[in-house]
Picture 1 (cartoon, protein in one colour):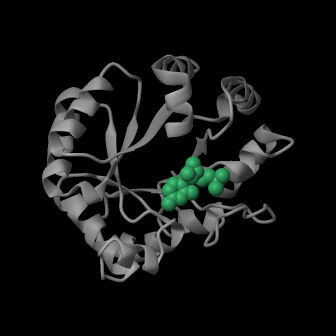
Picture 2: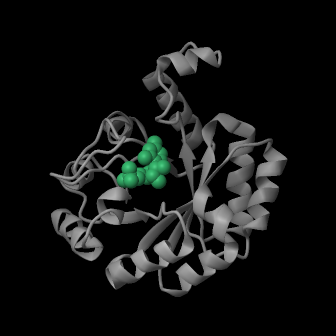
Length: 232
Ligand code: C5P
């Protein structure tokens, strides 16, 4: 059954601030969620986040924090004044770091949901072996997802294919944020294993992270509307 609350998050991966502003203007009020990653955050900084939030957007800050527990917690403290709603951390930082981040978030960023990144989708089996991990990629994804949930993290970033496997083995209230989405007829770009918005929602995605199908469209607002209609 389709998850009727599945929301679109626009991945605002653009080369400069004026392009970012232009796309936000074009998509208008229909767009509620924006993902800001390292490219944009390191360039445009906290001030840009505040400006985007002042347009009424919810912000998913995709910094993929990964360090020793104390440093991750301190990094989160530095985000305390920012208007963000979701933040990514790497599950490979380990249980102690995950638990510390969960406690820090409760304390300092109570509005923020932490999302765990498991195995980056750019990593294949050879890459995993080359860093000394002999597990199969899906097993490693499952292990890190369960570790995240056991450590108190409530959200997981997962590709659509992982979602199909993880949804049944994780608590029903786990939030799944899913990139690798392509509406029918749109170019895959470098994404290989994709699902349509509707398919991903049917598999239980709560949020769909979508970039190029909206960013590269001649009519970003129209493309967003079509996706939202497919989800409704
Ligand atoms: O343009 P596209 O729709 O492929 O953008 C997807 C977004 O999701 C990008 O910001 C990309 O970095 C991110 N992402 C991904 N796959 C992951 C994790 C994040 O595509 N496994």
